[in-house]
Length: 162
Image (cartoon, rainbow, N blue to C red; front, side):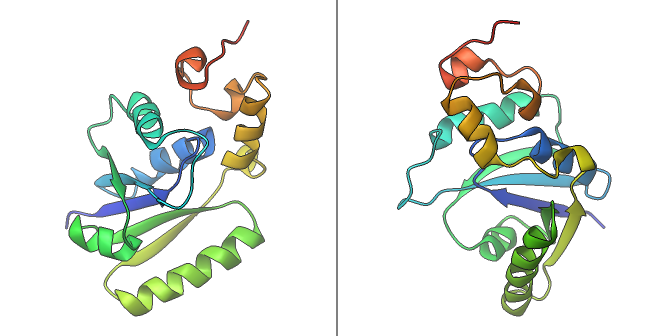
């Protein structure tokens, strides 16, 4: 049976924690669609096009990873793309409570789509896109929080002096 998972989020920006979940998720799924949610009412830190480009840079050599955008409900996006699972990361008990509630609603709406939680690796439990954004906002060295090979000057408008 071919298993496709959707990994939804705003990914503003995409962090090493996100990257870790996708890499680990590839051990469970044949394909992962990283679904960048677009909320027309919110203005993100990074334009959606830049977020997609950054994620594509990270997974350029991973044919089993696809990047798409969506504006509808995640379960509807899953159905449209033939996904059988939703992949979510959990860093702490607060994340679990929030994700559990969403998973239950998704199950009521589309019982055939299963949510799978992966625990964040210990080194990523304190990391969030919000923290990475704050570090980038103040033009500090955020390399340890973002995937390797990211061109800071291109994506964030400043360079890191090694």
